[in-house]
Amino acid sequence: MIDLSLHILDIAENSVTAGANLIKITIIKDSLSNVLSIEINDNGRGMSRELLENAKDPFYTTRLTRKVGLGLPLLSQAAEEAQGVFDIKSGPEGTCVFVSFQLDHIDRKPLGDMAATISILIASNPGASFLYTHKINENIYTLDTEEIKSELEEIPINTPDVIIAIKNDINDWLNIND
Amino acid sequence: MAKLTIADLKKIKDKQKATFTLREGGYKAKVTVHMGTCGIAAGAREIMTTLMDIISESEEKVVIATTSGCAGLCAREPMATVEVMGSAPVKYGDLTPDKMKDIYKEHVQEGNPVEKYAIVIGNESTY
Image (cartoon, rainbow over all chains, first blue to last red; front, side, top):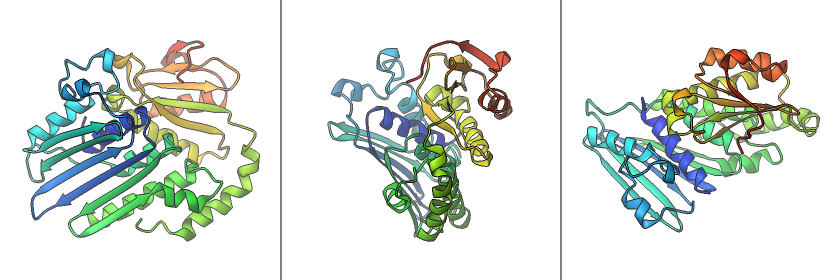
């Protein structure tokens, strides 16, 4: 994976595969404490204790458990390379993946194109709800697909014009604040 | 949300309402981009972005773009499956944005599978 936004897309696709219909993605960049953190929280069916214990082991997760695959080990490795922390909690009520990085670490992957990641997640999973929060120092951006859906009424959220508007909105904010 | 206001959404809604009834008859084609870890690492997001851009620029908005997991042919990623209603689905591999544009034009719009990029032509469905 070239950047972190691709990891986020990958982990959130796992959430959808696990039957989640509410996926919360939170990114916090804090220059003062020199930390970049990402949390992906879903209400999917969760993982068994055995699967969870081995989630970071790429050799454990072969075809038998392809629900997790290589995605988590790769993300965990990305965190380790940048003096970060990787943590995963999972239960019947859902799964929460947390990862943090030393913001100015030379090996920290760039965040990448979050507008592409979020718009693709929404476009390909119109039935699920996404809550995307992005905090950059004191500025906060939130995008709640439930708000957008209630505004759109019978027009589906994955209508191309809506997806483009969402993508542009995220890009506009990031261009100003990041 | 930054600038995406209720007024913006209302504008889109009104515009869509005008064409919505035309589309209720169903979709002409479905394109599924394989978005497993292998696909994403190989560039599937760029393929999906290209596809969504083509669909939004196209006048006839009767194509669904969606994603699926790993299809088990990780070495041939990025992959996409094109299903034109009434004909057999076709799996394409080793995609690039340019190949996706060719496939959209020749297969999705004109109905002719692009054999040089195809891996499988058959009744295998992705869902």
